[in-house]
Amino acid sequence: MQTFEYASPTSVKEAVQLLASTSGGAEPFAGGTDLISAMKDGIVTPARLVSLQHVKELRGIKFSSDSGLSLGAMVTFEELLDNADVKQNYPALVQAADGVSSPQIRSLGTVAGDLCQRPRCWYYRAGFGLLATYNGKSLVPDGDNRYHAILGNSGPAYFVNPSSLAPILIALGATVRVEGEGQREVKLEQFFVTPTNDNQNLFALKPHEVVTEIQVPPPNDAKMAVYEVRQKTALDWPLAAAAVVLKMDGDTVKSARVVLGHVAPVPWPAPEAEQALAGKTFSEDVADEAGKAAVAKATPLSKNGYKVQLTRVAVKRALLRAVKGEA
Amino acid sequence: MRRKKDQRRELAKEGLSRRAFLQGAGAAVSGGLLTAEMAQGAPKAESGKVVGPGTTPITLKINGKIHKLNLEPRVTLLDALRDRLDLTGAKKVCDRGVCGSCTVIMDGKPVYACNVLAIEAQGHDLTTIEGLRKGGELHPMMAAFVNHDAQQCGFCTPGFVVACTAFVNKHPDPTLEDVEKGLGGNLCRCGTYAGVRQAVLEAAKTMKGGSPNA
Ligand SMILES: Cc1cc2nc3c(=O)[nH]c(=O)nc-3n(C[C@H](O)[C@H](O)[C@H](O)COP(=O)(O)OP(=O)(O)OC[C@H]3O[C@@H](n4cnc5c(N)ncnc54)[C@H](O)[C@@H]3O)c2cc1C
Image 1: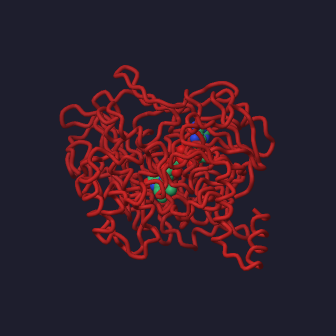
Image 2 (image 1 turned 30 degrees about the vertical axis):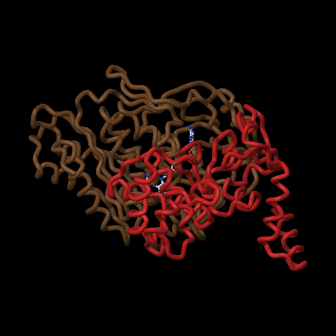
Image 3 (image 1 turned 135 degrees about the vertical axis):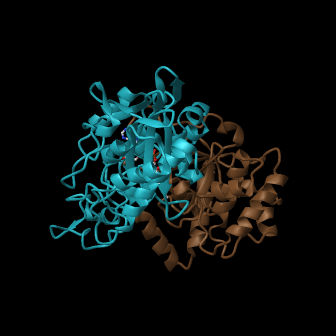
């Protein structure tokens, strides 16, 4: 790992100043579960780390049935999973967080860190850049692309967004609060950026901005679920995942949000699936149709066609889990 | 880092093993060892102050003892334990937070020491595998690992024992299913999982009331 300066502020304001007052590039440092590894691999080489560990205002979970859920950026997976309000009101968020099963990662990994983690594309992690290029050509289309994108993959980016929390938070309509020179809010759906060059920021963050809070609207009796398809039950990311949030009137779906994970360079909303559900009387067949619609526009690469089927099934099973409580 | 390598080479020339060298380094460090009472209020990094990239004083509370070190901010807790403090129980295998062999307990929670910077571990209570054993007595989790033959080559074992201890402290009455899920942070390439699960179930019974050391 290259050397760097380190500072541990106690306020967001101070953190922002410390991020801004160096020329060599600075990174906010949360649990370190992704950043340290990325730095060891030399794919991130900040001149300064600004630890958020002692910034108390970034901690804590608040819930009220009127205003919904507020997650401090530094809330850990463990805190999220142990929170009674979250369990009761956002079961799908628990399902998503529960997929990160390593207790060691849960102890340190934070919600903002999960949203801002870097892609796992093995070409990227091996030093070929976000766009995985060698001699000006992407290594992905003709290479080992079994875990790469099946949607939003017309290039030049082929990696998949690795966050398990993002799809369900987007489906729930979450907003990210960020602070830099001022404070602002960004819809989580607009937070993720598909890069067109190696140096582009993957998130809608301006230089020196930090995420301070994730706000989630009240659940209002919505039915929700996440279904992940994983190769291994632990220490790995899902191959495909679907997050669904449904407003129901009896057996009829009034409206639906369907967001896919691990299939595209950004968390991938599936309006085709949402349309296939709206106004329908819910049934297994309807769920199946929604799954089909979600992947209708998929363009698999040479070795990841299997992900199309996994995604289709993930959508169907997420819907059955949400509406009928099926495992 | 460069200097250390040179030192090692020199020492090797003089016929000293790496281990002897590291033990020597450990002894030198424990010159700065304070008593447990002084451990209270181990200082955190000063707010807003920029330190590094060179060495900076770092104070760690490990197994009840305070250790004062001079480290660059980039030194991980795992490297500090193994290379500076001669606490080599936590193993360095993947060094990327995906195998569990370096698990230590920080404020009661299991963490990968390779994912924690030593400078970030200041102000926290750290327990390593070395700290689980009291006197000559095996910790109940260690005894259960022996009883259930829960190791083969043994390289992942310290990480498993520490992770399992933290798990039982949080889940005093686990089912087999809980154990299977709860140990999702450690890998064993010999495949001793069946023995580990049984060991955890047994230790959970003997540890009722919590493990005193973690
Ligand atoms: C073996 C393994 C398996 C995993 N499996 C999964 C999985 O299945 N699903 C999943 O979602 N994740 C998975 N993860 C990833 C894990 O969830 C992330 O590493 C973790 O959430 C990152 O959080 P952190 O606090 O440690 O972030 P850090 O490593 O500290 O930071 C990560 C990035 O986020 C930035 N950042 C952090 N906080 C802020 C903030 N407040 N404002 C702006 N930027 C910020 C940092 O600058 C850095 O670039 C896995 C990780 C490992 C090692």
